[in-house]
Image (cartoon, rainbow, N blue to C red; front, side):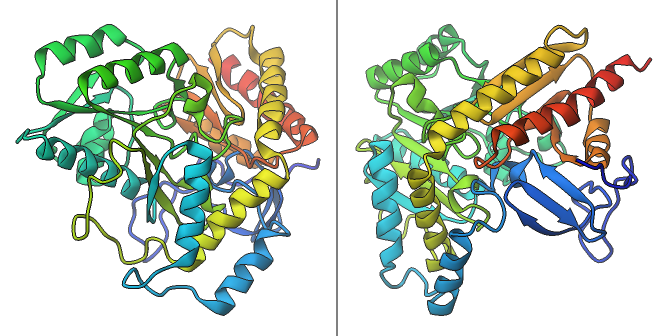
Amino acid sequence: MNAPEPVVAQTLRPMPHVMNTYGRLPIAMSHGRGCWLWDTEGRKYLDGLGGIAVNTLGHAHPQLVPALQDQIGKLIHSSNYYEVPLQEQLAAKLCEISGLEVAFFCNSGLEANEGALKIARKFGHDKGITRPEIIVYEKAFHGRSIATLSATGNPKVQKGFEPLVEGFVRVPLNDLAAIEEVARSHPDVVAVFLETIQGEGGINASRWDYLQGLRRVCDERGWLLMLDEVQCGIGRTGKWFAHQWAGIVPDVMPLAKGLGSGVPIGAIVAGPRAANVLGPGNHGTTFGGNPLAMRAGVETLRIMEEDGLLAHAAAVGELLRAGLARELGALAGVKEIRGAGLMIGIELDRPCGVLVGRAATAGLLISVTADNVIRLVPPLVLSANEAQQIVDLLCPLVKSFLAEA
């Protein structure tokens, strides 16, 4: 593959007239096909980021595009004053593949997580607990609203937005003894809320035995187990939801990102303990559950199933991890290569944000999270050949970076 002409890789710049909330590379995308993107200057990029785990089916999928065109020609929005048949269709499919009972649709992962927090609080109040508490985690990321950033475990995200919302008890990941201690010292806990695999926190996975232990503790205590699958769900790890590797079922599961293959969508899926906590007037949304987003979700899940993308993500993810391990695993400065399926993190021993621009110059789109973890979350349609191209493009950059003084 011919590398594109260099971009000004280290320049992060605002856009005129757009609020300056993002540090952007000086690249504007024009169009995409499969796992490839082209910018407005004609440069070509292999998409190792997938719109941050969003573009499940890649770009311009030949079945998704006509389905969305068909839906746009029929109905984009009607409102939740009326029945939306596609909501029932998508909800039924999500319940079938998750083992849960009901779904609520919103527009993003933040909204899904916010709704989960409301369910937990209402669940506590219904039990007579006036100040319910929720266990959350170090290095967690659940969003940037006031409530979700309070649940998030990143002081950088929280700084400048105090006072934070109260009612959260924070613990380290994969430490069941810490949960037991909170259970003894905090009688008003009503729920445990965690990402099955932390995304923004650095691709940190919950151990399967830990999740099984949490399920047991929540059952014993009458708590809700709420698993944020916004980034790691929808087939990314090789199962529909990452927690299914542990053989458990949560009470509440927020979803978003890959569910609509690029169309904004979020969902809260709930089991029997939480299914009836919210009633009319307790929660709502103007745009959530609109016919266009629902059609995107229905078609995404259908295509994934018909094309065997769960097994494909597991297999190609293993090839990608093996290639990275072969090239980088023994390298001084590489602390760990981890993840599952097509959700992979490469932790270095130093901040490496500069690699985002360098990779773009080389024709590869990646991100760096938690300052020193290279994150790869490509579309689930990534081929074995494209996985090898990621290895071939990324590994020399990492080696050169680590060799710098």
